[in-house]
Length: 519
Image (cartoon, rainbow, N blue to C red; front, side, top):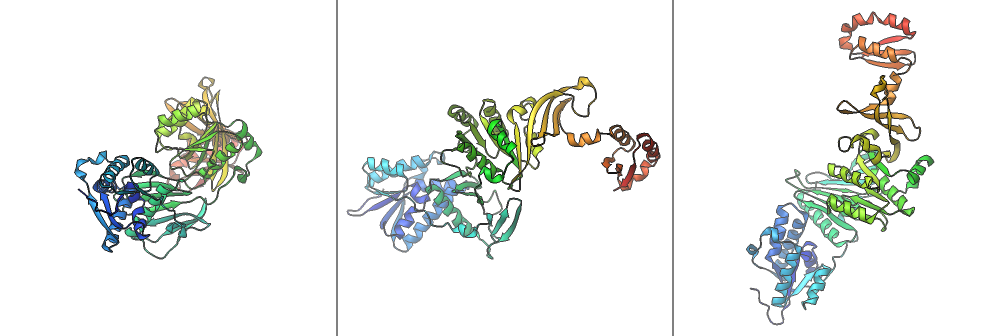
């Protein structure tokens, strides 16, 4: 049992004060002197968090270590009281610890040290003295020295030199930024600094804090921290958008602008990682907002930089059903779904789109058709045109391709018998209206057929192609400027000797030059 001596001030920090590093700052600044009592329940909570490799645990334990060092210098006297065994680890959370701290402070007549505004209000209402200090932001975070106007991201890993990714989407290089080898202590201290700042700032979130990894959105910086045992060492990756673009900066064709204004309500933005998908989605969301539309986003992490009028929902802190209910009841005109990855993501996109909400989905894909294929197997084929009407493919920061998706009933290209007509999803180049792909069911399979390649084969040499493919199984048949070329594997050319004798007859029949090429 802790006893307060007459005239002595006893300072009792809560969890926020420990995790944000407030107590050591107040000691160093001279606002706290004498006796500090830390409840053991806080240590249990922090230890459990650190054992689970959560960043908050490491941040708090580093602060306790710093207080111990200040105690050894004689600036304060630190004591630990409480019965940690009376609480199961799973029962301890911040609200429970706040109650313990308040009850103890009231009992011993101590001063609660906190950076939590709610804790301050509740404590004052109970007549408990409070030393409240919002954690002060740093003028410049230590990692910001690595960033310049060309830096897209920095990559810090223990045992290696820090490197930066510099350039622009599609045109970048990795550059060593300091000729030092980072150690674990440096990265732990940087992670602690990031966590402290994220908990203090209103524009920052700890999106995910789980065993082995943490994802933090710190202003415009997206930060990924990984730790053993998930990774083989501490690693911190910090990504920052180079610049914020408006839709007008992309110089889109007027036809596409009209489409976005009038008809596009199931938009899929696709591209490889780092190509600028989210930047374009951000520009499109802001464009609709400026047009007077109600826009919401679903993100994880929330890394889009958007006007205050656009609400950004976190996929991490809400389950799909909750997001579904909120978005249906709030009735946005458009919802931007960033980074669709899981089956649940695609199902939520489909449910919201079928409910009449305009959807803008962002997916990883190496080609425009791959983005559509990610829906195959997740939804019925006939639903795809209802879910996606426009596919915008981003490469190297620019719009490289736009597809129009529509449904029709027809005989698929390449088939002959009329009774084989069926529902077909047509994928057309939006700007030229040229048919590029057909998607339909054939037997039990859903097939994606590249129509442009097929239409070449079905041209004036259609029948000839079929005959050559029968004569030379496994060969490639292509059209050239002077006729047709049959491309054979060099090591197996001998087995086609008999078939080669028939080429002259085919040349006479079709009045076309046929060449054999060995590869």
